Image (cartoon, rainbow, N blue to C red; front, side, top):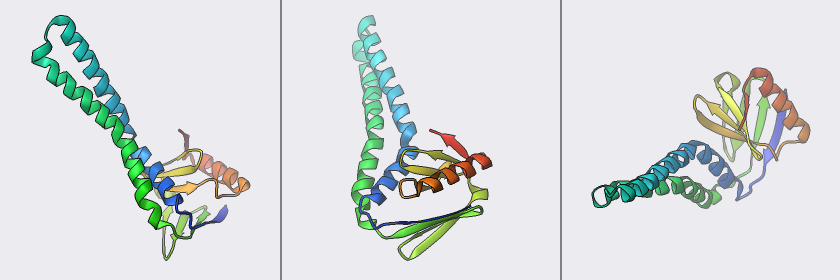
Length: 165
């Protein structure tokens, strides 16, 4: 397998990459926030129903606020990543072989060997490549040729790396 494609200097592209990677890393905050908010609401309702009001209401209110802030943290970080990364738009490219993924961006380049990749998830816009438990990079799907996208999908499935979201 040998897939090669270029990435144009699109000011919106770095923000989409940052949003995709931070969205994966920050997903637990939304779940934790929803759980905290739910417990806070149940606690407030229960304390009102049983007459505990003044003594424990600050605890339940704090849990509710912490939950809401935790749920808002992920969208806020993604918004900041998109806003701040617009200045990083440079031309680049990908060279994907059976051995590794080579990426270049401007004057810098780097790579990830497939042996170090633990899994790959697909989203509508990117293949998200994990090294260990952390997302390491993305491969932009819409910049690839349709045949290359299917070739990469077959390669990832053959190595047991592909997992759907």
